[in-house]
Image (cartoon, rainbow, N blue to C red; front, side):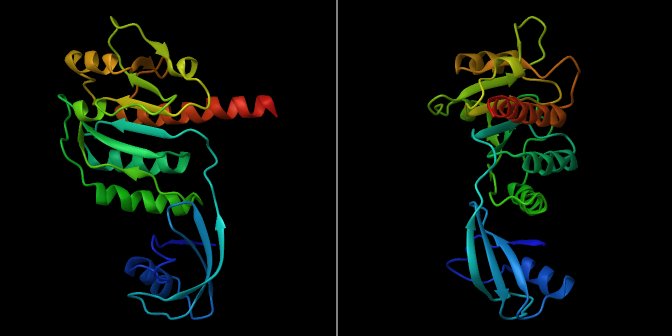
Length: 242
């Protein structure tokens, strides 16, 4: 069943305008039809359509079910936006499909794109959340200067990694450096990589330089591989103990 997104459904049992138009005009849902609605905070609502107003369809909540995330750690991917906006949009879509908790567009010295619209990325994230049958919408920050992000205090037990390509800087393989079950921040720089004067304060803030493997990766690919590596390591541990 196709899912819809209504973040305030319990306070206002009504679909937002874009979701209402999709349900009524595109899918031709009629009063009495059943719908599945998620609120982006981990809840799934089985609803019945009451009105077929394409500007704000009213629904009746029949049942509420908690749909927790299937991964344990809190995963933050902080990545410099790509030069072409469509590649960043692709990345957000795929990160949400795989599973991520927070996405932070970073402003770095060598960034080719200094600003990006979080509203556009959130719309893509909503679509990916529904398509991948999730009920939790990741947090998407406004573009954040790297120094401001580095100033954030780590949560208890959180691991911090920075994908960095300088051959003179000792690096570890992310899959080996990560401790399963730990919350994690992963920094990914722009196509020209982090400036040496940026990586030094990152290391001072507890970020461990890592590599994603032997292949040279584009920014969006490195961010995706980093996120997926965390999932694979955790899944391997889970299945090895079952």
